[in-house]
Length: 306
Image (tube, rainbow, N blue to C red):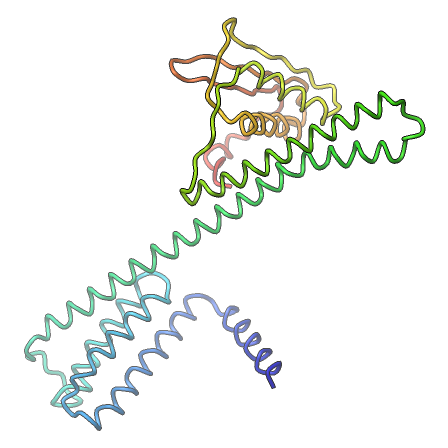
Protein backbone atom coordinates (compact mmCIF):
# COMPACT_ATOMS: atom_id res chain seq x y z
CA UNK A 1 0.00 0.00 0.00
CA UNK A 2 2.84 2.36 0.92
CA UNK A 3 4.63 1.64 -2.37
CA UNK A 4 1.40 2.24 -4.30
CA UNK A 5 0.87 5.61 -2.64
CA UNK A 6 4.50 6.51 -3.30
CA UNK A 7 4.15 5.67 -7.00
CA UNK A 8 0.91 7.63 -7.26
CA UNK A 9 2.62 10.59 -5.61
CA UNK A 10 5.59 10.40 -7.98
CA UNK A 11 3.30 10.10 -10.99
CA UNK A 12 1.20 13.06 -9.81
CA UNK A 13 4.31 15.19 -9.25
CA UNK A 14 5.66 14.25 -12.68
CA UNK A 15 2.37 15.14 -14.35
CA UNK A 16 2.16 18.42 -12.43
CA UNK A 17 5.69 19.43 -13.44
CA UNK A 18 4.92 18.64 -17.07
CA UNK A 19 2.25 21.37 -17.09
CA UNK A 20 3.52 24.82 -18.24
CA UNK A 21 4.32 27.10 -15.29
CA UNK A 22 1.68 29.73 -16.16
CA UNK A 23 -1.04 27.10 -16.42
CA UNK A 24 0.10 25.59 -13.11
CA UNK A 25 -0.15 29.00 -11.45
CA UNK A 26 -3.66 29.49 -12.88
CA UNK A 27 -4.83 26.07 -11.62
CA UNK A 28 -3.25 26.64 -8.21
CA UNK A 29 -4.83 30.10 -7.90
CA UNK A 30 -8.27 28.80 -8.93
CA UNK A 31 -8.06 25.92 -6.44
CA UNK A 32 -7.00 28.17 -3.54
CA UNK A 33 -9.67 30.76 -4.25
CA UNK A 34 -12.26 28.00 -4.62
CA UNK A 35 -11.23 26.45 -1.31
CA UNK A 36 -11.34 29.87 0.39
CA UNK A 37 -14.84 30.52 -0.97
CA UNK A 38 -16.02 27.05 0.09
CA UNK A 39 -14.72 27.58 3.63
CA UNK A 40 -16.48 30.96 3.79
CA UNK A 41 -19.78 29.38 2.64
CA UNK A 42 -19.51 26.74 5.36
CA UNK A 43 -18.61 29.24 8.07
CA UNK A 44 -21.32 31.69 7.01
CA UNK A 45 -23.88 29.26 8.36
CA UNK A 46 -22.25 29.83 11.76
CA UNK A 47 -21.67 33.57 11.53
CA UNK A 48 -23.93 35.44 9.10
CA UNK A 49 -21.99 38.66 9.63
CA UNK A 50 -19.07 37.16 7.71
CA UNK A 51 -16.41 38.77 9.88
CA UNK A 52 -14.03 35.91 9.08
CA UNK A 53 -14.28 36.02 5.28
CA UNK A 54 -11.76 38.81 4.80
CA UNK A 55 -9.10 37.01 6.87
CA UNK A 56 -9.61 33.78 4.94
CA UNK A 57 -9.16 35.53 1.60
CA UNK A 58 -6.13 37.43 2.90
CA UNK A 59 -4.60 34.07 3.85
CA UNK A 60 -5.39 32.74 0.36
CA UNK A 61 -3.74 35.81 -1.19
CA UNK A 62 -0.59 35.25 0.93
CA UNK A 63 -0.35 31.57 -0.10
CA UNK A 64 -0.98 32.29 -3.78
CA UNK A 65 1.56 35.12 -3.81
CA UNK A 66 4.16 32.87 -2.17
CA UNK A 67 3.80 29.85 -4.45
CA UNK A 68 3.22 31.43 -7.86
CA UNK A 69 5.60 33.25 -10.17
CA UNK A 70 5.67 37.02 -10.36
CA UNK A 71 3.01 39.50 -9.28
CA UNK A 72 0.05 38.75 -11.53
CA UNK A 73 -1.68 35.97 -9.62
CA UNK A 74 -1.15 37.63 -6.26
CA UNK A 75 -2.73 40.88 -7.51
CA UNK A 76 -5.49 38.94 -9.30
CA UNK A 77 -6.38 36.96 -6.18
CA UNK A 78 -6.39 40.19 -4.17
CA UNK A 79 -8.84 41.85 -6.57
CA UNK A 80 -10.96 38.70 -6.74
CA UNK A 81 -11.03 38.41 -2.95
CA UNK A 82 -12.18 41.99 -2.42
CA UNK A 83 -14.91 41.68 -5.06
CA UNK A 84 -16.00 38.25 -3.81
CA UNK A 85 -16.24 39.42 -0.19
CA UNK A 86 -18.30 42.42 -1.28
CA UNK A 87 -20.61 40.57 -3.66
CA UNK A 88 -21.10 37.18 -2.02
CA UNK A 89 -20.33 37.39 1.68
CA UNK A 90 -21.40 40.90 2.66
CA UNK A 91 -25.00 42.00 3.17
CA UNK A 92 -26.93 42.47 0.97
CA UNK A 93 -25.78 39.11 -0.41
CA UNK A 94 -25.27 38.65 -4.15
CA UNK A 95 -25.17 42.38 -4.73
CA UNK A 96 -22.42 44.99 -4.85
CA UNK A 97 -22.30 47.67 -2.20
CA UNK A 98 -19.37 50.03 -2.62
CA UNK A 99 -20.61 52.30 0.15
CA UNK A 100 -19.56 49.87 2.86
CA UNK A 101 -17.60 51.47 5.67
CA UNK A 102 -13.90 50.83 5.25
CA UNK A 103 -14.22 49.22 1.80
CA UNK A 104 -11.49 51.36 0.13
CA UNK A 105 -9.14 50.59 3.04
CA UNK A 106 -9.93 46.86 2.73
CA UNK A 107 -9.21 46.94 -0.99
CA UNK A 108 -5.90 48.79 -0.58
CA UNK A 109 -4.84 46.54 2.31
CA UNK A 110 -5.35 43.31 0.38
CA UNK A 111 -3.63 44.78 -2.68
CA UNK A 112 -0.66 45.90 -0.56
CA UNK A 113 -0.41 42.44 1.05
CA UNK A 114 -0.38 40.72 -2.35
CA UNK A 115 2.26 43.10 -3.75
CA UNK A 116 4.54 42.76 -0.70
CA UNK A 117 4.31 38.96 -0.60
CA UNK A 118 4.74 38.71 -4.37
CA UNK A 119 7.84 40.92 -4.20
CA UNK A 120 9.27 38.80 -1.38
CA UNK A 121 8.49 35.64 -3.34
CA UNK A 122 10.18 36.95 -6.48
CA UNK A 123 13.28 38.00 -4.52
CA UNK A 124 13.50 34.66 -2.66
CA UNK A 125 13.22 32.65 -5.87
CA UNK A 126 15.80 34.84 -7.62
CA UNK A 127 18.22 34.38 -4.71
CA UNK A 128 17.58 30.63 -4.79
CA UNK A 129 18.35 30.49 -8.53
CA UNK A 130 21.55 32.49 -8.04
CA UNK A 131 22.60 30.22 -5.16
CA UNK A 132 21.94 27.10 -7.24
CA UNK A 133 23.90 28.50 -10.20
CA UNK A 134 26.78 29.48 -7.91
CA UNK A 135 26.88 26.00 -6.39
CA UNK A 136 26.85 24.44 -9.87
CA UNK A 137 29.75 26.65 -10.99
CA UNK A 138 31.67 25.86 -7.79
CA UNK A 139 31.24 22.12 -8.32
CA UNK A 140 32.36 22.43 -11.94
CA UNK A 141 35.46 24.38 -10.92
CA UNK A 142 36.24 21.93 -8.11
CA UNK A 143 35.92 18.99 -10.51
CA UNK A 144 38.31 20.62 -12.97
CA UNK A 145 40.92 21.65 -10.39
CA UNK A 146 40.94 18.26 -8.65
CA UNK A 147 40.93 16.21 -11.86
CA UNK A 148 44.18 17.75 -13.14
CA UNK A 149 46.55 16.52 -10.39
CA UNK A 150 44.66 13.23 -10.17
CA UNK A 151 45.26 12.63 -13.88
CA UNK A 152 48.97 13.23 -13.36
CA UNK A 153 49.06 10.89 -10.36
CA UNK A 154 47.26 8.12 -12.26
CA UNK A 155 49.54 8.55 -15.27
CA UNK A 156 52.77 8.37 -13.26
CA UNK A 157 51.69 5.43 -11.11
CA UNK A 158 50.50 3.57 -14.23
CA UNK A 159 53.90 4.16 -15.85
CA UNK A 160 55.63 2.65 -12.81
CA UNK A 161 53.28 -0.34 -12.63
CA UNK A 162 53.35 -1.12 -16.34
CA UNK A 163 56.98 -0.30 -17.11
CA UNK A 164 58.65 -0.81 -13.75
CA UNK A 165 61.02 -3.45 -15.12
CA UNK A 166 62.32 -1.19 -17.86
CA UNK A 167 62.62 1.99 -15.82
CA UNK A 168 65.77 2.80 -13.96
CA UNK A 169 65.74 3.44 -10.24
CA UNK A 170 66.29 7.13 -10.84
CA UNK A 171 63.41 7.28 -13.34
CA UNK A 172 61.10 5.57 -10.86
CA UNK A 173 62.19 7.95 -8.10
CA UNK A 174 61.50 10.91 -10.41
CA UNK A 175 57.99 9.64 -11.16
CA UNK A 176 57.36 9.03 -7.47
CA UNK A 177 58.57 12.52 -6.64
CA UNK A 178 56.06 13.87 -9.17
CA UNK A 179 53.31 11.74 -7.61
CA UNK A 180 54.22 13.01 -4.16
CA UNK A 181 54.27 16.63 -5.35
CA UNK A 182 50.91 16.27 -7.09
CA UNK A 183 49.41 14.57 -4.04
CA UNK A 184 50.59 17.42 -1.80
CA UNK A 185 49.26 19.91 -4.36
CA UNK A 186 45.92 18.07 -4.31
CA UNK A 187 45.77 18.21 -0.51
CA UNK A 188 46.42 21.96 -0.54
CA UNK A 189 43.85 22.45 -3.29
CA UNK A 190 41.18 20.55 -1.35
CA UNK A 191 41.98 22.56 1.77
CA UNK A 192 41.68 25.78 -0.22
CA UNK A 193 38.39 24.69 -1.78
CA UNK A 194 37.04 23.93 1.67
CA UNK A 195 38.25 27.35 2.81
CA UNK A 196 36.46 29.00 -0.11
CA UNK A 197 33.30 27.11 0.83
CA UNK A 198 33.58 28.47 4.34
CA UNK A 199 34.26 31.95 2.96
CA UNK A 200 30.93 31.82 1.12
CA UNK A 201 29.36 31.33 4.53
CA UNK A 202 31.41 34.22 5.95
CA UNK A 203 33.21 31.89 8.34
CA UNK A 204 36.80 32.56 7.38
CA UNK A 205 39.12 34.52 5.11
CA UNK A 206 41.87 33.55 2.68
CA UNK A 207 45.21 33.08 4.40
CA UNK A 208 47.79 35.24 2.60
CA UNK A 209 51.56 35.25 2.79
CA UNK A 210 54.08 37.39 0.90
CA UNK A 211 55.33 35.43 -2.10
CA UNK A 212 57.75 36.37 -4.89
CA UNK A 213 55.68 36.78 -8.05
CA UNK A 214 58.44 35.39 -10.31
CA UNK A 215 58.56 32.20 -8.23
CA UNK A 216 54.82 31.73 -8.69
CA UNK A 217 55.21 32.12 -12.45
CA UNK A 218 58.12 29.67 -12.54
CA UNK A 219 56.21 27.08 -10.48
CA UNK A 220 53.15 27.45 -12.74
CA UNK A 221 55.24 26.96 -15.87
CA UNK A 222 56.93 23.90 -14.34
CA UNK A 223 53.60 22.26 -13.52
CA UNK A 224 52.18 23.13 -16.93
CA UNK A 225 55.15 21.61 -18.78
CA UNK A 226 54.85 18.41 -16.76
CA UNK A 227 51.16 18.00 -17.55
CA UNK A 228 51.21 19.14 -21.19
CA UNK A 229 53.98 17.40 -23.06
CA UNK A 230 53.62 19.71 -26.06
CA UNK A 231 55.67 21.99 -28.26
CA UNK A 232 54.14 25.12 -26.79
CA UNK A 233 56.77 27.81 -26.33
CA UNK A 234 56.50 29.67 -23.03
CA UNK A 235 57.98 33.11 -22.44
CA UNK A 236 58.10 34.66 -18.98
CA UNK A 237 58.57 38.37 -18.32
CA UNK A 238 59.24 39.68 -14.82
CA UNK A 239 60.49 43.03 -13.49
CA UNK A 240 64.14 43.38 -12.51
CA UNK A 241 63.18 44.08 -8.91
CA UNK A 242 61.60 41.37 -6.76
CA UNK A 243 57.81 41.74 -6.56
CA UNK A 244 56.45 40.48 -3.25
CA UNK A 245 52.67 39.98 -3.25
CA UNK A 246 50.39 38.92 -0.36
CA UNK A 247 48.57 35.89 -1.75
CA UNK A 248 47.59 32.27 -1.36
CA UNK A 249 50.26 30.77 -3.65
CA UNK A 250 48.31 27.59 -4.41
CA UNK A 251 45.19 29.45 -5.51
CA UNK A 252 47.11 31.90 -7.73
CA UNK A 253 49.08 29.06 -9.32
CA UNK A 254 45.82 27.24 -10.02
CA UNK A 255 44.40 30.36 -11.70
CA UNK A 256 47.49 30.67 -13.91
CA UNK A 257 47.43 26.96 -14.75
CA UNK A 258 43.74 27.13 -15.69
CA UNK A 259 44.37 30.10 -17.99
CA UNK A 260 47.32 28.37 -19.64
CA UNK A 261 45.36 25.17 -20.06
CA UNK A 262 42.40 27.03 -21.60
CA UNK A 263 44.75 28.79 -24.01
CA UNK A 264 46.05 25.43 -25.25
CA UNK A 265 42.76 23.52 -25.29
CA UNK A 266 40.56 26.25 -26.77
CA UNK A 267 43.07 28.36 -28.70
CA UNK A 268 43.30 25.58 -31.33
CA UNK A 269 46.27 27.16 -33.14
CA UNK A 270 48.15 28.17 -29.98
CA UNK A 271 51.92 27.67 -30.26
CA UNK A 272 53.17 30.26 -27.77
CA UNK A 273 52.23 31.36 -24.26
CA UNK A 274 53.44 34.51 -22.57
CA UNK A 275 53.33 35.03 -18.81
CA UNK A 276 54.18 38.31 -17.18
CA UNK A 277 53.80 40.26 -13.97
CA UNK A 278 54.15 43.98 -13.48
CA UNK A 279 53.97 46.29 -10.49
CA UNK A 280 51.21 48.89 -10.95
CA UNK A 281 50.90 51.20 -7.97
CA UNK A 282 49.98 49.05 -4.97
CA UNK A 283 48.93 46.11 -7.14
CA UNK A 284 50.61 43.28 -9.01
CA UNK A 285 49.13 42.49 -12.41
CA UNK A 286 49.56 38.92 -13.70
CA UNK A 287 48.99 38.41 -17.43
CA UNK A 288 48.60 35.22 -19.47
CA UNK A 289 48.42 35.70 -23.24
CA UNK A 290 48.71 33.42 -26.27
CA UNK A 291 48.81 33.54 -30.05
CA UNK A 292 45.77 31.32 -30.55
CA UNK A 293 42.42 32.16 -32.09
CA UNK A 294 41.32 34.20 -29.10
CA UNK A 295 37.84 34.60 -27.67
CA UNK A 296 35.04 35.26 -30.21
CA UNK A 297 33.83 38.85 -29.93
CA UNK A 298 30.21 37.74 -29.41
CA UNK A 299 31.25 35.76 -26.32
CA UNK A 300 32.92 38.67 -24.51
CA UNK A 301 29.68 40.13 -23.14
CA UNK A 302 28.74 36.80 -21.47
CA UNK A 303 32.21 35.51 -20.67
CA UNK A 304 31.66 35.35 -16.91
CA UNK A 305 28.06 34.16 -16.95
CA UNK A 306 29.06 30.51 -16.46
